[in-house]
Image 1 (cartoon, helix red, strand yellow):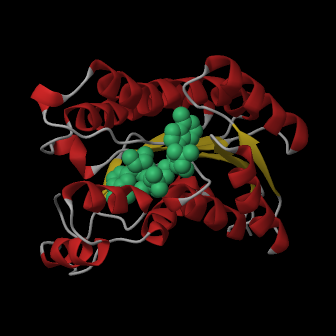
Image 2 (image 1 turned 45 degrees about the vertical axis):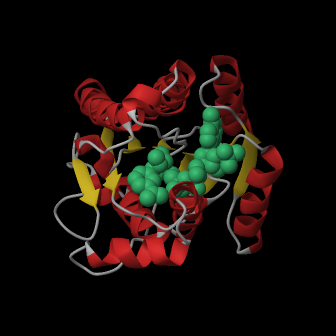
Amino acid sequence: MTTQRIAIVTGAARGIGAQVARRLADDGHAVAVFDLDEAACQSVADEITAAGGRAIGVGVDVSDEVKVEAGVSRVAAELGPPTILVNNAGIIRDNLLFKMSVSDWDSVMAVHLRGAFLMSREVQQYQTKEGWGRIVNLSSTSALGNRGQANYSAAKAGMQGFTKTLALELGRFGVTANAIAPGFIATDMTAATAERIGVSFDDFKTAAAKEIPVQRVGEPADIAHTVSFFASEGAGFVSGQVIYVAGGPKA
Ligand code: NAP
């Protein structure tokens, strides 16, 4: 039987994060749905509650130190001490290097790296006190390099170093930290890329699937399944790892 834990999933109003929130609730955990728009968070939380789970929606910009502190305190007060953290919030601001603005660079770093740092720093106080914790960070196959994504690939490679350091620092407190590097997952984020390059999302997915060994694109449930493993009681000896969930061995 699963021990009920309190989980926070960032960027969980839609896409991969929403599916991760639903999956952790199905696994028996209480879930705090964090995203920019509190109403959008609440509709995912309501869905979980309607299915018999425990959830709250919390409007938080993960790059804002004050909002992060307030949001995590609210979770502790309303659900209990958060011990599972999934740093999933993310944005893309793609452009070739010579056209990339400073704000394209800074906003990607702010959401992925500063956001994961602020959230982890806030949640680790509860994890270390409880003597148990799981941190799962969303990296990407783009960490290996991807044309038009100098900002995003640097952030996603940064998430891997950040993860390994958390594993080293927090292991003695019963806390593991691992990263998931998804390949192509069908969400609004990949739909936006299709739109930017001027192809239909269906054609984009069909072309991508041909290059993937398992011959299909990924779904949010593929990532949620991997998060569920890392968050599980039995995964306590797995830490500092990066798992590529990409339908094959490389991007
Ligand atoms: P998505 O559909 O665009 O969802 C991302 C969510 O993050 C959105 O709800 C967004 O809110 C939220 N968000 C953005 N900035 C935020 C902030 N400052 N604070 C809190 N929430 C914020 O993306 P996704 O495809 O599900 O991606 C989820 C994660 O997986 C990201 O880290 C992404 O980089 C990573 N990933 C995705 C893929 C893929 O193929 N889809 C591949 C590799 C890695 P708004 O809607 O209000 O902007």
